[in-house]
Length: 215
Image 1: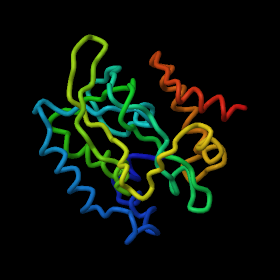
Image 2 (image 1 turned 90 degrees about the vertical axis):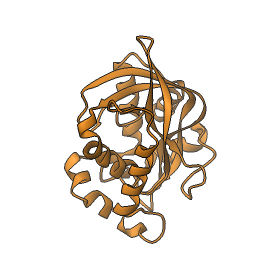
Image 3 (image 1 turned 180 degrees about the vertical axis):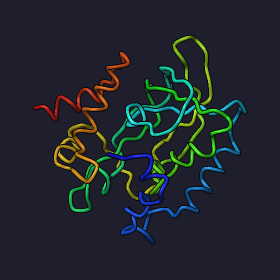
Image 4 (image 1 turned 120 degrees about the vertical axis):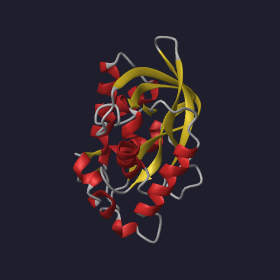
């Protein structure tokens, strides 16, 4: 399983060394992206991070509060090819992102102002190791009726690992067989479904994929 120590030590980036010079990012690339995103942040009272995948059950960052949240205008999509983590170069899986359109319900995590740089450095190493996301500020709605701006990692449709077709019929076979040092691709899907249900959340796309994997 992915750990905070693996991310903070620099060893996680090294697991992508076989992609260096191709699409894997350096630590300098990752830090530059983080600071660019923070320069555009709309507030100054900490940062909200919208979790829609493994950040829900394995956030690995220190946060002081969390809320169920809805991001309108985005939907979950296994649209990124994956060759590491829960896959291998000779057994390619799919990685989750969000793409434009629809609605995504997830969990918003709040990071205190004085911990932003330390905690987001962990997140950026985790999410931007190959630069397949575009870190974006999006409005998210909380169940208490309030709205905040949060960081959302959106699929980079111009990236080499992006795949336009993320329908269950297309991605199901790859996800069913992909596996790597962090476990299986299928386990990710079922764990995500369980994590969503634990917060009384359901995503039809994820549920359809679970049914495919169980069939």
